[in-house]
Image (cartoon, rainbow, N blue to C red):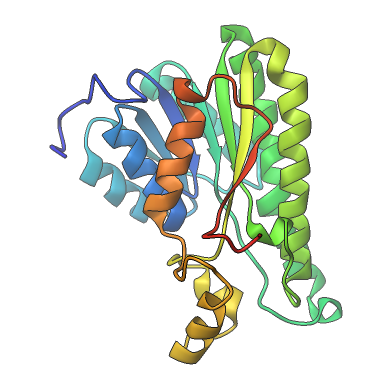
Length: 257
């Protein structure tokens, strides 16, 4: 893609989006797909340098903002920066997430528990408080929460991470039914583990043997990719999905079957 061109005929043409955790992994896949389909994208990430690098790669359709999504001051600043850059917010992607290392549930520290719930769950509450009034006022919007197969078919030793993703799935459904009369759709995607910075944390260690064991649980025989997430997110946030809300779509190669 030409770094200075704007796609005026894409599936998301004219849309303005925020992607949290957008500088790497699944978030970066969503950012690249959205830009390719004509959206303007605010890349929000705790790693500002990485967000700025991706924005520079994309060009005029992207901007970067440092944000710790577990802090209301950062979330409010992010929303204000997006309005200043693009004028409106049509799409919100709650992608930022963390995990604790695999271990028995009683061995997870209180500090790690608080961090996982703040980033994975509280952030959805904070972004809703900041963005939902804007979407209600304009009469339309699409929110996408990036949950996990861990919220549908939990694996042992990731208990509190799994719980945050189960929370996110329920939040998606209740947000969807409450916001539907306002013209705001809310959906989720449930990825299986993929080639992202969190992969090693999910597996505990990254060796060929551990990878092979993990992939053996996925019927299609591979990890999910940032491109997979970008494609699914694009559909759910586009006008093609105008009748779709409250859906939590597995993008997992069949793992949850």
